[in-house]
Length: 477
Ligand code: 5AD
Ligand code: SF4
Image (cartoon, rainbow, N blue to C red):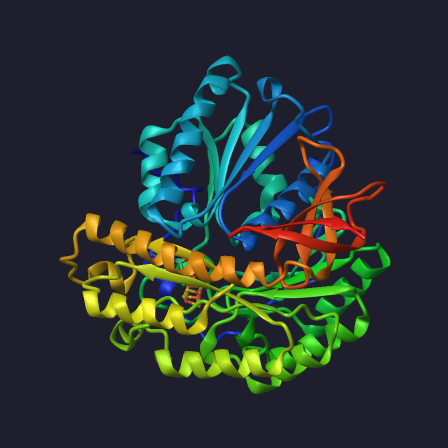
């Protein structure tokens, strides 16, 4: 593999470094003049993998592309630019991306001008970039999570100068305000409140791929939320890898409870936030959520494990008991709250007893929903170096048992909705039946319901007639 001088390649070791240097903020975004009409008459397609941060980044990528003239592709056979926005959280997310890049080879063979670009968390990994350079010549553009704003000039080099472009910074750069955005949904919007993560849970690649924690100024966030309200958005979700740590890195630190309260006062009908780390979830936050009707009574509170020894080795900074104390405080303070969680099974050398402790925590908490995963070693993280003698079959069985247990509670929780009337924010109608609509309750339960003359974005009262593990059925009243 020949490395070209003008390329910036990633380096996970460098990405692990944290400096105290102030974050530069750029509030004016300028598109280079030679790229103003680069995309006129051309089309693009974006495939997005992974979390909400990636979905929001894809909205920025689409916004930038449309600003320079590109239109969304209706047909992939004639597309000019394909961007894959990737996720590195687990090995299987990576495998899916490589599969899709492989599929696009055919398009590249018939159109050598096609630009296939890869960005997102995987592109921050040295090993992935090496694989792409060695085995996937059809990829002509690679850029990192800190390089999105340079997309016009990168595309210029790829499309006009026919160069292979690689621009991946390992150290996070500026916080950009006012980047173009094309929101993919019309009544729900993502609002970044911070970037990066400094928690360094030992299994997690995110602090390396997304850099140090950088909070946006509260004034900028409030400005964005006010504008979304004026544009008629019904729901916003405040996004951060760990929203509870919001503002701790600002020159004049403020906390998430203060931000949440100020956002609530703007009066947008529904406010959500994710993700919360139990370690810095404060009483003030619980009180603010309980105080405002437009802050939804739904909290995603990843526990990861119910065993203290494993939690310690994960670097999570709380015990099973303190998690349950927080859980109880939330349930006792916020009326009708729903709580979901993330759980990893098969962390290195997780004993049977440790796994049983996780099941016990699930029995105590009876979550409304859970996202459960088999631990996947991420090269470069501390956990990847830990000894692990647990075989894959045991891990799969644990995942199965865990799912059985939490599914049972989720169904029970859902059944409690039967006979009640709930407010649903409508997403759209079912693909199969036009008079069947779907949307979410305040507690984030998916509801499929019948009704007439209903539009996406409507807030509708729905009478619940039936409950399943993952959804409710009902009819509009
Ligand atoms: N293996 C398995 N699951 C992981 N997660 C994060 N890193 C890993 C990993 N290496 C899970 C955690 C996190 C969620 C987003 O993904 O549960 O909360
Ligand atoms: Fe990963 Fe932990 Fe940061 Fe979440 S809080 S992104 S799990 S390091």
